[in-house]
Length: 320
Image (cartoon, rainbow, N blue to C red):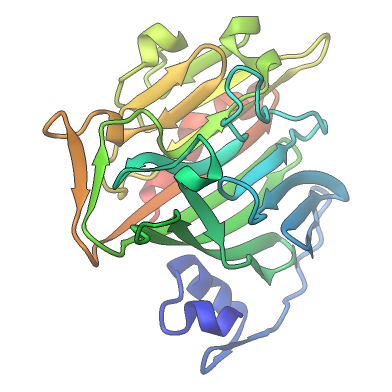
């Protein structure tokens, strides 16, 4: 499966992984290097169970990447803080199309690859591949087709997901997406686009939490439509400490830094499709490839929260 999907087109982050093994033609021969043992080291492990991949950190479930063919699109759920409590929400009753941590888009050549019934548009995985299943990181590769009955497929994406746990208070999901236009594509003005997060209600401004961007602006009114490199949402549960999630958009992304669509009930997404250059639509030519990179930082504690600007600076300074 791996060679069929990625022969001759290995994503950049996969090439980095390849330094720990050999590529023979298109076959991957892994050579695991034993990590240095330190007091704060956290072991990651991943296992594929049918149409999901479960990822644990130090033996505790961190997240699950779900890619079932009967879902609207692949997504992550749960996404757990170091305490084990979830920081995202899955299919809120009022907004059932918000599936935790996901990537999709509405109004793509008349199709809806974000919400509505499956027949309106669906992003279907070819079957995610575990490139590295444990140690210091987990690496997942996936290829997805954007399909709907009776219409040609407008897009295909290849995504590489790298999951790490830098320390006891931080979990990181890096997502690299290469989005290819299979025909001329027109995306109508829409707030439903690209990488998005729906937070657990307990951590949102609606329930006493904080939504803040890189410039220190807080809440929906101050952050909606604003250009910023990152956004974070965090709060406390009961007598516990701060827990939350930050979403970074890499400065090399097309349209970066994109304005943010935010809601005090816990939604945040850098959404360029809502602010197209001509006010009407965004267009991609057949064969065009758009590369998008995002980092999700799940954190616990004030020290980890305060380090977000420095973490973003490090992320922005590197090339994916």
